[in-house]
Length: 70
Image (tube, rainbow, N blue to C red; front, side):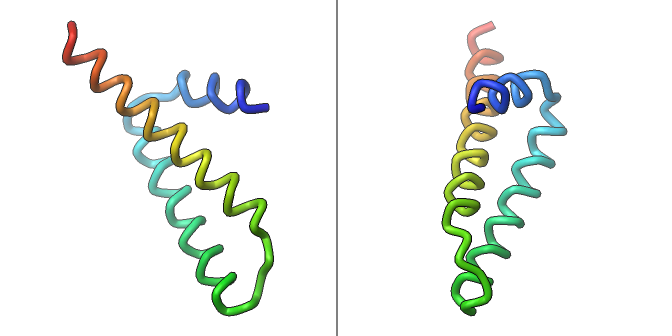
């Protein structure tokens, strides 16, 4: 499953990556807030969002580094 997510991220544009990172961070904030209020117990979803954000950031950074070497 992680490979499908990685492939999906690699096939997106820089603008879409920034938008996706913002959306994921917003979802993570909401879930953490709900968790602190005792409204949810979805730790699995929080972990998945953190991993997705890391994948997006990694792809963005690799594109920056690839652009600097060209």
